[in-house]
Image (cartoon, rainbow, N blue to C red; front, side):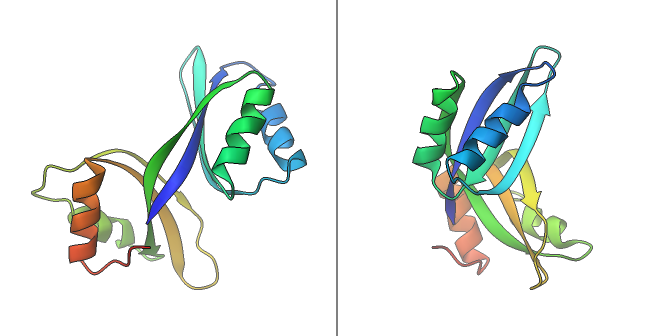
Length: 135
């Protein structure tokens, strides 16, 4: 399934992350999955909110640079080799994995894998051919 992800650029300094997370919570925005990547000077907070448009407005209220992009969400079996099975779908294809992160599994034994794939259209075709549900 296609998900809307918000990416926020943050200065890589103490005290820059918590205000953003707090502000999202104060605006009633629930974060379904998230990751933080950093370099010496900046970080990129990527997350899947329950309302991407509202989340974008909220982070802009704090003066942060942010954008919405499309990523793919795939349920993966929470077991050894589950991720490898998903990645094998893209073997011998022109699809590249730019990055990925995961939500921890809930009680059903499945975890949500968030993937930034290029080209996204071909990735969706391969996932559908592998029998993974699209919504």
